[in-house]
Each structure stands twice: as C-alpha cells, then as structure tokens.
Image 1 (cartoon, rainbow, N blue to C red):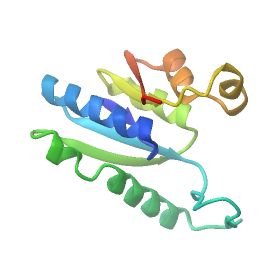
Image 2: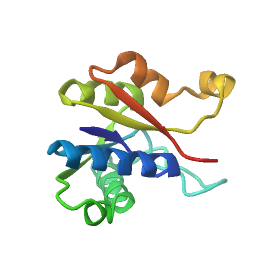
Image 3: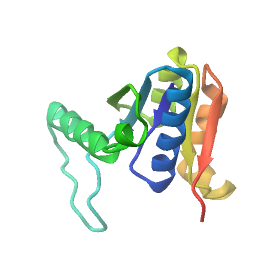
Length: 140
C-alpha cells in the first residue's frame, strides 16, 4: 500500500484512508514524500541556492515523520514505513506504485486550469501508476 504525503489537509486525509485500507488488508503502508528543493517556510523567505543534499533529505524525512505522527496510534496494527525521496512527485509515485497493491493520493481540487499550470500529482498518478489509484479530496 502506498500513500503520497505532503503535509496538506488532503494528504492527511489520504494517509488515514490508506492506513485503514492497509490494516484491513494486513499489508504494510509505505508513506512517500517527494521533494525537489528545500521547503518554503512562508511567503518572502529566502531559499538557499546551494544546500547539502544529505541535510535536506534528513530534514524532509523528519517532516514526513512529523506529519504522520499519531497515525499508528489511530490505526492499531499498522506497519508504517516513511520515505522521503528526491524527485518530481508524479514520477516518484509512479515508480513507487510498481510494488503497491493500491496508491492513495490527496487531491486539492484546484480546477482544470490551475492543475494544467501547476501540474496535478493526482492526475499524473492516475495516468502513470502501475496499480489502482484512489484520489481522496478533503471537504471544503
């Protein structure tokens, strides 16, 4: 079982759905966070032009664990692995889906135009996954 996690409300809901599905099927859940650059702390922050890849990876891994804290307590019996992976989210998740029974991703529902301009991870996964995909939308 695979779930995409980016810290958004939609991905938190997707993690709950994926955890429930993994526990009911008796399979482990692999939570993947794809990243390309240091994360933004807010509007106007200055991102470093040069950064240490190992430090960045460790920070992204820590953030992923933080985002999913409490998931195993809410879903007893859940076997959870967290992986931060450097790369474009759509590509990383499509590759990760090769070994998954099911891929779960949160959808932000930005609309067709915004999705075309910014890219939609859920749309990319629907087209390139090697397993069934569930798109979970957070209520507005």
